[in-house]
Length: 245
Image 1 (cartoon, rainbow, N blue to C red):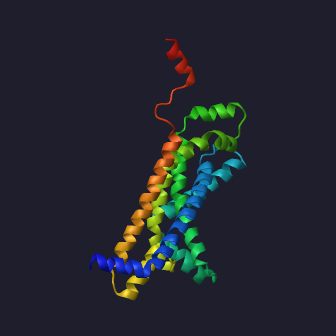
Image 2: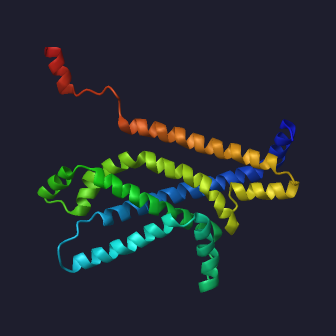
Image 3: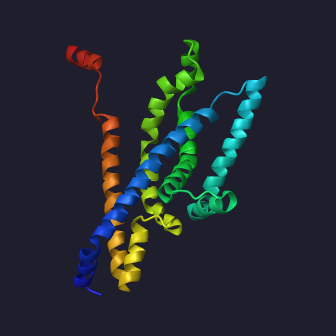
């Protein structure tokens, strides 16, 4: 084991490392985006005010029960187990052979959606109730209130948590090797098996994971600062008042 051996493994196998990293990023990006959309939809449904009686109350109660089961199941079970159940279980139970990449994106998406739905729900609950009341006072429905008043604030507030989920997904895609998805860990395992070297390939993979997560974190930090705006922001009216004084 030496620096030369690490460089040799990297040079000899760089196409596989690059393909694996690309697949990891593809699954992570698409899965996080779809998961965020799922989380927003579930969060909106779970915060719809339930009327005292009527058919709408029954439908909302049923929807909330089903969504609670979905959230608890995917938050309470490991992604590696979910992968085995969805990919191999579907093939055995229904005779349907899923596309590996499609199955991987689906698994990451619904897993992320379960976590994001609770994050979104918490973000919606944190908004001052006066804004809901003001929107209702001008005749907005719950969906209109969410789309025009609440969600723009929620998305800004949950951006750090969304970025955290993205970083987690980059690392958690490694469990998808159990269904033979050719992401970074799978490619690294293949290189280690072919070269009978384990330290060098896995050390290189760890550096690649670190580069990806560090880069994404820095990009998201910059995006957060952009959404926050300037720290020394002063309204124009206040400036005028100061100048007059």
